[in-house]
Each structure stands twice: as C-alpha cells, then as structure tokens.
Length: 438
Image 1 (cartoon, rainbow, N blue to C red):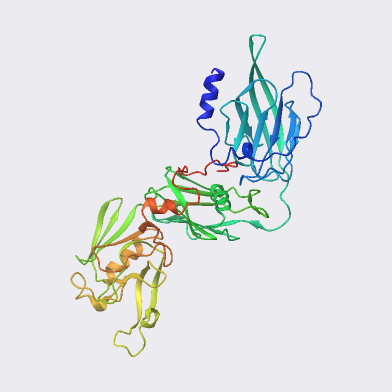
Image 2: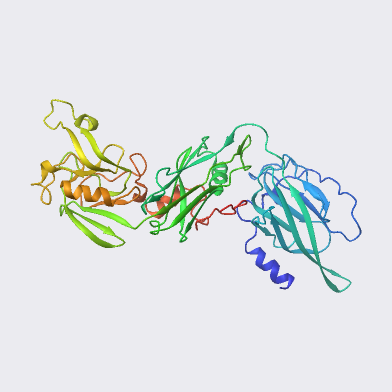
C-alpha cells in the first residue's frame, strides 16, 4: 500500500471520541530526549486530559529503539504519539502482552497517532510503528518499536460492576442485562458515564445490535434492538479495571457473566378476545381462555418479562390498597403463579372465575385461567420469557420501576438513555475497547 493511500485510509477513522483533545490542549514543555543512535526516529509521547483541559502531564520525546517508557502519573487522556523526525507514520499497532490491539488512528498529515480511549492504569503495551520518508530522492521504510507502561492507580475506592441476572443459566429472549455499580455516576458527569459504558462489554452468539441505558446513577440495563435470538450465548465483561472514571475514582475488577437463551416463547393476552395465545418460535402451541382486570383494576398493557414463578402464593387485597371490610377485599392461596410485576401482577390459576374465563373481565389485575392451563403455563414459561397484553384498557407497563418493562421503549428512546449517544457503535461489543477479554 502506498503511503498516500495508507494515510487516506487512516484519516477516515481519525480523531473520533476525543482523539484530537491532546492536540488542542495547552502543552507544558516537552522533556528533552535521551541520546539516540544516529538515524533512530524520535516520537513525543503524551496523554493529555480526556476532558480537553490543560495538559499538565509532561510530554517526553523518546527514541524508537525498543526501550520501555512509563507514562507520567498525571497522564489521564488518550495516548498520543507524535513523530519528531522527518517522515510520516503509515501504520501504528499498539498491543497489550496478550496481543490485543488498542483502537486508535493516525492523523490526516501522517505525523501523529492517538488512541481512541485512555490506557488503563498499571498496564504494559508495545507500540509497533511503520515510518516512511524520502531521503535523497529514495523512498525508505523503517520499522520501529516502543515499550509503554502506565503507572498504577492511586490507592482508594474502586468502581466495580455487578452483572445480572443472577439466577438460572438459561433465560427467555426478553431478559435484559443489568449492571449495578459500586459508586454512583451522576448524569451531570457525562464523560465519566461514557468511560463506564464503554468498558461494559456485551457480546452474543449470534451477534446482535444492543445498547446500555442509564436507569439511575448506579444502575444500567442492556437490551438488544430486537429480542435476543433464541438459543443464544451472551457474555458480559467489565473492562473497568484500571480505567480512570473521575479525578479520584478508578475502576476495579468485576466478575463476568455468561448466560444462554432458550426458545423464543411469548404469552400474548388479547384482552378484548379474552384469550391468551402461547407461541414457541412463532408457532401457537396453546390457546387459553382467560379473564383479566375489571374496571378500576385493569391489567397493564404492553410488554412484560417473567420475573419468577411460585407454585403457591398468598394474595391479599391490602397488598394493592384494598382495605379489609371492603367488598373487593380478598385473601386467597393461589396456585401456579407466574409473576410479571413486582407489585403483584401474576398469571395464575383462578378456579373461582371459570364462568368468566373467555368471556368477561373479573380479576383485580392478574390474568386468571383454569388450574390445568395455569399448571401447563407454569411449566412452559421461564424467567425472561415475554408476556404481552394487547387490545386492553389498562395503563401501559412502566419501563423500570415495576419489573422489566424495558421493551416498552422504542429503539430511539432506548438509545437516548445511553451516554454514548445515538451515533456510537452498538454492535455487541464496547466501542474502542482497550482490554477485550472475551
């Protein structure tokens, strides 16, 4: 590949997501280079703040002779390698000891390479550079090497993530992933949220398009654009260890998570028709007559996700605000109950309402059916399976405060909950990941 085509190829990727910040920051005087053999190329190494503030970390000019170089402890932004001898960079590869590459780009003029993200603390890397120059009318190519090391993070608390769900190994295709952070990251610090979100890596086989959503300052949910594929394998990994999140907070180690999905199972209740169709991989496998919430107690509409199952559960009216003595009060032991909201909405056996099932709505918000049908449904559904209520009269299922209502946000709304923005890559792996470990 010619030098001009190489530069053109690199420039298409250049300077995304803060890569130009090291160029624009106010730079302190560079430290003089150590003595180098004649003809040895030189680069200036720096890592200015990712926020675009003043660059207080010293920039060092070093020879490309393979000797290791340790970045200054104040260097917190993307790694920046600037060529100081004649020529231009046609290729730069920065790898960790396991051979995994760091994302980055060469500048338009071919004189500078910048990583897409800051390097984690306490890590070693090797930079291999291909340089070209014209000398006396002759075109020359030079291969150079630079060892890099980042300093250890200062002592103190570490930001970690606990991934969920944490129950069985296999879930339904509607199951969102969760990440509970050990420290709050407020919406007022978007740079910190971006650093966290980029480090939370989700990959699936088959591969899907998905994104994280900040439910709160310490809680994130992840879902695909569409449902998970049936019989998929999903792996979640944190690359936070060593990542600078804020001025005084660095990431720490977090346990990964692996889960699988089962068949694509949906239970679709048509309120107007008083029936539930249960589908497996798109094929109806059972039609069940049901009764749903009556006036004043309408069953929530929209898409829900199975939260769990209880063979027997005690249901009382005061749990939903019906006082004892009220004619609507109830106190029942209910069989084969499949939970879909934390507030107590279930799909369950209701032998007392057999006459209404298939023709009328008489419940207090749950979906009732015969004992036989409820037992079959209990055996068929698993956590994460989808429960949809259509053609109803109830309020819509809320997204996050009463179970997993994540699917009631369309994809545009979901992406608005990400700190990376709609234009960021969302293909099942972290953008600009510096430590892909799966």
